[in-house]
Structure formats: C-alpha cells, structure tokens
Length: 173
Image 1 (spheres, rainbow, N blue to C red):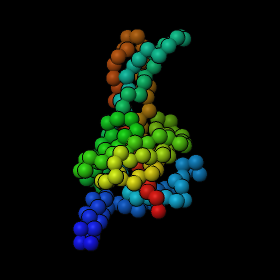
Image 2 (cartoon, one colour):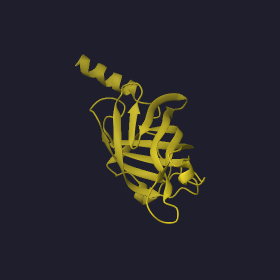
Image 3 (cartoon, rainbow, N blue to C red):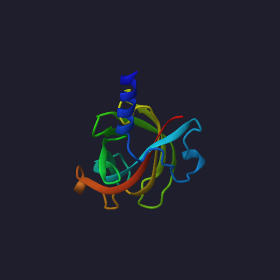
C-alpha cells in the first residue's frame, strides 16, 4: 500500500504544474472528446525545418518540403520536452514519448501553422506522456514554408522558419 501511494505521489510530482489548464475556445472539429479532459499544456518555441527539393514537373518543379520540427516545449520557463521528429513529442526528464496523427485543422492566418487536433498514442505506460489520448496545437505563430523562391539554384538548401505554439495534452476522464 505504501509503495502504491509513493508511486502515485511520484507520478503526480512528475506532471507539469500547468495540469488541467483549459484550452482556448476552438471550432467543434478541433475539440477533444467529451470523455477526455486537459491534463497539461506546454508552449513550443523553435523552428520548422524545410529543404528545397525537386518535386515534379510544371513551370517550377522545385518546392520547399517540410523535413522536421526542431523545438523545445516549456512549462513556464522550464524545458520539459522536445520535438525533433514530425508528430513525436519526447519528455526530457523521463524519456516518455507520444506520437499523433491529425484529425482536424483550422487555418490560423497567413504565415502561421494551422491549429490542429490530433489522435495521440503514447509510446509507453509511464512518464509524462503516458495516457495522452489527444493533442491540440493552438495559438500558432510562424512556421510555414519560406516565402523565398525554391529553384534549381538553391536545390538542397535548408531553411529554418521560427514558430511558437501551445500544445494541450488530454487524457481520458
């Protein structure tokens, strides 16, 4: 019994203090299920990495192609997680991770990544991301493909586009 209580306390202390923060109002297609509740929110600050690549025929067969994010997620000013692979979040403290697939989106204005709701699948049963079932990305700024031309002259070059976003992580009630 004492071990069970100690494990529960340890898990609670491992969760961000921003637990159970309500997300901003979103369109119905961006809402989590009524069977879920917000568990915690993390703010991302980083870059979206693009590469100029040959994409096919037409008058300009080159286009900026998304490669990967390179962002740190924060709880306040404390680094909590990283994103260095598309659709994968990894805890810095316990190495737990979660992956997700988009199931709804909403435009967020010119130059900004769209807001998303994603179906999540934790990769493990313990740690920060254990039990996460849905992720919302909101309050985005920046992060879309560069406005500079992508041509044969700069094929293979990389561009890093700064972005910020808030990620709300949900668990079943």
